[in-house]
Length: 235
Ligand SMILES: [Zn+2]
Image (cartoon, rainbow, N blue to C red):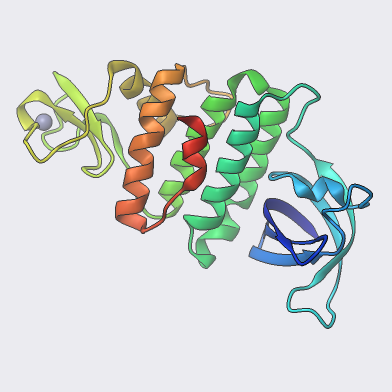
């Protein structure tokens, strides 16, 4: 069975529970001895590794992974902390923002994002933002990226608001709209929404990425009731 690792949680002494995505949805598995450095399944410790696993149903609560073989891994020899934060955040949003029936349909998209992370480590933030917007779309929220969401005007756009559904022009800005994004962040989010592929690069400064992740953190908490903790790794 092919799985994408999303998260691992230590369980009893050296075992771990792995939350993974399959083409049919999310599943949890027990991996015996995963936390031992000698584990033959050690590669499953990292989020976003795609592996072919052999499973046994047994006496445990979760099916047990007996054997694993890596199909794709997004990692390189010299990854920095930011890269690990991105893989952790992608794992967390995939696991937590989608309902069971929405998860299977993000599988192929996630696989493309993982291959892009492997092939183009220099555009990690761009891949993260495009994928994040796709997950939110899959969860049922889309955004107007071409004009003001209220009056359709393309002139005098002053901000972008996730909770209002898109860009807002000067005339439609009311006191209730609290989102104030910088020009850089607005350009980046527009590109991320309309991107059809991970190869379309979203130019993203570190400041713009932080601004957008903070807005997204508030949005998913308010609308989906989910607290995304790995966003704090970026502050
Ligand atoms: Zn307007």
